[in-house]
Amino acid sequence: MSNAITPVSHAAPAAVKDVQPQAAQQTAPANQKAPQPQPAAKAPAPKDTVQISTAAQTALQESRETSTQTAQEARRGDRQAARLLAKEAAAKKE
Image (cartoon, rainbow, N blue to C red; front, side, top):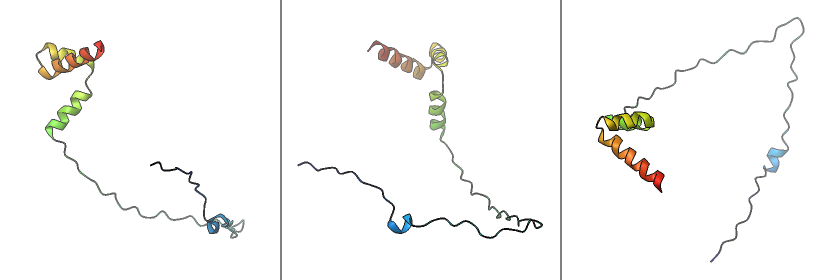
């Protein structure tokens, strides 16, 4: 069974189409300054605190590592770095 797909048009409702913005008719006399709007008092935004686990921090650090750093760690005996280098070498051969 196949369903026909029909295009959807996004037309504004008629009531919205007919609304025209009105220009402000109130103007200050030349010798008076226009009143300055007062900025609303801003409430401080709530602050969220996030704690990242040690494993997540380690994974993030490993993802930001350059290939040179990985190679150096592999030479020093880092097994994770050695596995990563082996996977990269295998991917290049394919």
